[in-house]
Each structure stands twice: as C-alpha cells, then as structure tokens.
Amino acid sequence: MQTQRPFSLLCELTYRCPLQCPYCSNPLDFARRAHELSTPEWKRALTEAAALGVVQAHFSGGEPLLRPDATEIIRHAHDLELYTNLSTGGTLLTETLAGQLRAAGLDSLQVSIQDADAENSDRMAGGAPSFAKKIEAARLAKAAGLSLTLNVVLQRQNIGRMEAIIALAEQLGAERLELANTQFNGWALKNRAALLPTRAQVQDAARLARAARERLKGRMEILYVLPDYFEPFPKACLHGWGRVFMAVAPDGTALPCQTAREIRGLTFDNVRERSLQKIWFESEAFCKFRGTDWLPEPCRSCSRKEADFGGCRCQAFLLTGEAAATDPACSLAPRHDLVDRALAETEAATEAQLIYRTANASLRISEAGQPIGSIGSRRRQTPKLPGPRE
Ligand code: SF4
Ligand code: FES
Image (tube, rainbow, N blue to C red; front, side, top):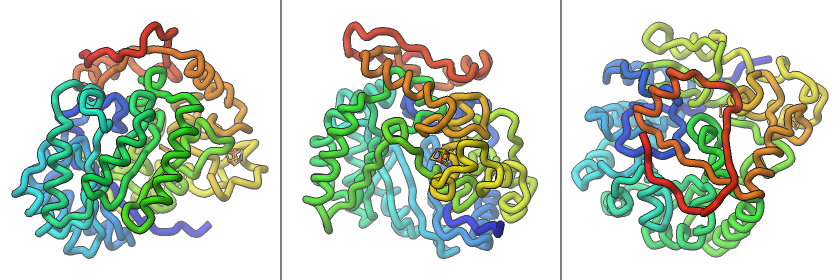
C-alpha cells in the first residue's frame, strides 16, 4: 500500500481554556500535560508539515488565543501558503486582535457557541457568563473582514433549539454554520448519559438542517452530519487513520487523531524529537491502523471496508478496550450492544450529572485511572441541569 501524504494539520496550541465544556475533545488528563511547544518549535513543525504536503493548518486548543504568539504562528503558516483556520471560544477576541489576525493572513475564524439561548450556552460552557462575549467575537470577526464559521456542538440540551441557532448564525452573517453532533470520546463519553440526544431529537434536527440548507443555499453553508450512534454504519473517522490528517498536541505529541492519546498501549512520537515526515511514514501510532490490512472480522470481509476503514479507533477502544475492534457504532460489530444499550437508556430518559472540564476534574480522573466503558446513568427525575462542579 502506498502511503499518501497528509492534507490537514491540527495544531492544538494549548490545553489551557477559560471555559469548561463537558464535551471537550481534549484528553481527560489534559491538566497533566503542561509543557507547551515554544514559538520556534511550532514554526518548525509547520514548516515540516508544509514540506510533507499539508495544505491546511487548523489552530485550536483549549483556547488558542491564550497564546500571545498565536498571531505570529498563524502568520508563519500563511507565509508557507497554508490555508489557515482558527477555532476559538471567542471570549478573548478584541477588535485589535481580530485586525491582527486578519493582517497575519488568517483565512477563516470559527467561533463556538453552546446554544442560541444565552443561559444554557453559559451553563454548558461552565457557568461563567460567556455568551455575550462570543456574540461580540463573531461581530468583531465580521467587522475585521474575516470569514466566519459558527460552530455549535449538538447534544440533548441544545438540539431542540436548531431553528434559533440557525437564525442566530444568519443574524451574525456567518458564512458557515457547523452543527457538529457530539463525538462520544473523552469528556463527552464521561458525560454521555447527560448529553446523548434521543433518536426523535436527532431526526428533527436533521430535517431542520436540510430545510435550512435549501433555504440558505448560496448565502450560508450548513454542515450537519448524522451521528454514528443513529446510523447503521460508521463513517470513516478522519477519512481513515493516518490517511490525510495529523494533529500536534500542545506538548508536541504527534497524533493520528486529536483524541488518540486516550488509547492505552499506543506510543506517540513528539515533534521535538522526530520530524513530522518520519512520524507520518514510520511511527508506530500512525502506521498501526492505516489502510485495511489490520482489520478484524467482520470488517475484513465487508464490502464497506474501503469506505469506512472499520469506523473510529478511539470509539472502539473507549467502548470495548480494544483499539483494533470493529467500531461498536456499526450494526454488524460484535459489540454493537454497547451502543444499543446507551441509546435505550436515553430513550428511557436518563439524567446524569455533568462533569465539567476543569483542571481539578482532570487530575481527579487521571489519578483514578480510566475504567473502559465506565458510563453511569440513572433515571431522570427532572430535566434540569446542575451547575459546574469541581
Ligand atoms: Fe464498516 Fe466494519 Fe461495519 Fe463493514 S463491518 S460497515 S467495514 S465497520
Ligand atoms: Fe479518534 Fe475517531 S475520534 S479515530
């Protein structure tokens, strides 16, 4: 098999963040990983990425704007002729910074909001007021001439407000609205019992997204992808492991997927010690699940294997304890019962307390270790969400 070159690089500039979203894609033990790459180290990684064939650089975190050198790093990526996109929670964007990002050549800015309802948006971001700042950030981005994407992670608490979310994106003049169904890894898996929507909610949302996409054609692009849990077959997560995508974590760890460090037993190289070229072509972590030769049954004999590569490795590991297992989201997977059971619990209306992404929670969880599939839920008494807790 000829290994193709990566197309897209995700640069997670920092795990530090003023928000505490309970579905964050950062690792559960993020608080233990503080040794961030320096400005020259990020620039070198970007230079190596461009030489390797990468054409897009996405900057995220945590909150990437906590790095005072974010603009300088983005300018470097722009000078390398990479398409650049920055994902921010929006609370730190100022008029000056928006102008500086534009001048640095940033192609697109993505602002995440948690809901169109200010109270719930604030609650889902951890409790401190953030909604108004996010809306202001979207306005500042537009005023600076940046292309604006509004990103909303959908879960049980906001999926019923799709119309209001779409209306808000229109009002803000977003070029793109990303309605991202929660990927149940890491913090989101910990909180799955509280976050997983019902099938009826997901179907309603899909219908509204389709109608809005039609109505807004040519004005605003709307992305809505049905979540794996509600489909018979999984999607090719990241277009296949080690095929087109690589991520570099704040401490320089190079990852085939930003949540891959949740997979125990895989060893990852660091851009401080090895070039991206060597990591992409030779490292154990990138090579292990590349292509289809490693696939187990039933994937090995399945006609869909070149389309989905057996689904998501992180999901397979986090649900079954085996990274090489068929993704349990697949209806043909031997452990599909794990997903069926989660869906049945949601349909029966469950309530669970949210665990917010705080440094204290991260330390507590990583000290306790991560039992696979440790996802508690209990019958719902009231739909009210608790506030953040340490
Ligand atoms: Fe994809 Fe494997 Fe399911 Fe076939 S059996 S649809 S290859 S995950
Ligand atoms: Fe990591 Fe799918 S989220 S491979």
